[in-house]
Image (cartoon, rainbow, N blue to C red; front, side, top):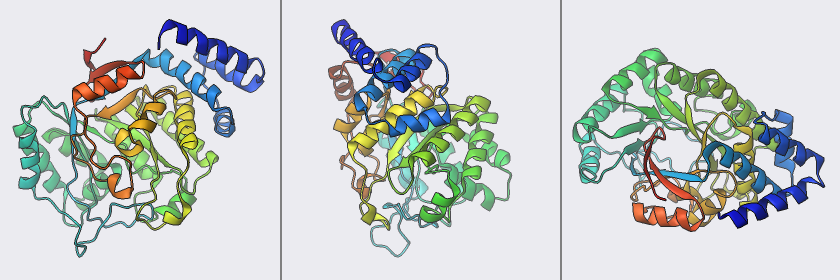
Length: 380
């Protein structure tokens, strides 16, 4: 955004705030780097002035991250879509008997890694279904072997739900299991499996899987032993604004305690091929509102991720104007989780040049990062 546009946006915000005491209060709190309350966050969710939300969220984004938008060079491995759980929102899960199920061997996954050798990849992202026969030793072997092929790659792997299952199966404590994974090369864990923390909502959409206390405990334990992580929310299904803001509050409280979250990812519920498809999907306005409120409320989580394989490039671009500062990565067409649920990007992949061009055309400064947001290349 050039100086003229910036001045114009400031004048628009000033005009809006002159007619709205609540939004003026929020602007003052952002200016003073003062935290907003849960009730104020709820009121922001209920705000119908999308322009004001955008301007306020970008004020906070600029305060935290300047004009930078981050991305990394990464690829995904999804070991299996066979899962012991049957979450009602999930379009990815299959059983052993399903013809479109897959279950990669360690050798097959290592072949994927070998195909990316020499491409200057900084991260491999590993998540999948909770397979009944894959134990902690299976995944420890996988990680150790990946490090032999890609010794400098950052391994971000396994949602809290996967970790809960494999560590319990090994009869280890959370700390023991996480240390075992760390010692063979696990560097961080993704934010998946959080869904919505509210107990009643989880009972309706994912009653079988790890509960919210377990999710929070796993991330807290990981942070304690030096494994950083991401956090997420799955929104746009049967939850209310109150459920969303309470979810954000639990994450903010944990971050106050551990400072272990690298980024927050708002994930929109996609309704293709799952048990609650009939409820439909929220519109783009709700998606952008969620980004804005998340940026303003989560003052202690530095990065908000606009996950373009799920949102599609167009909506991901808009999210960058509603507080997001991270585009995830180049992906290289290695994820199916959201394409199977009806995501706009059927074959997600962008080259570094394409990512840089995409971000620059939106008025931001692209930054290639590593997995913990050290700047590797700044594209002025």
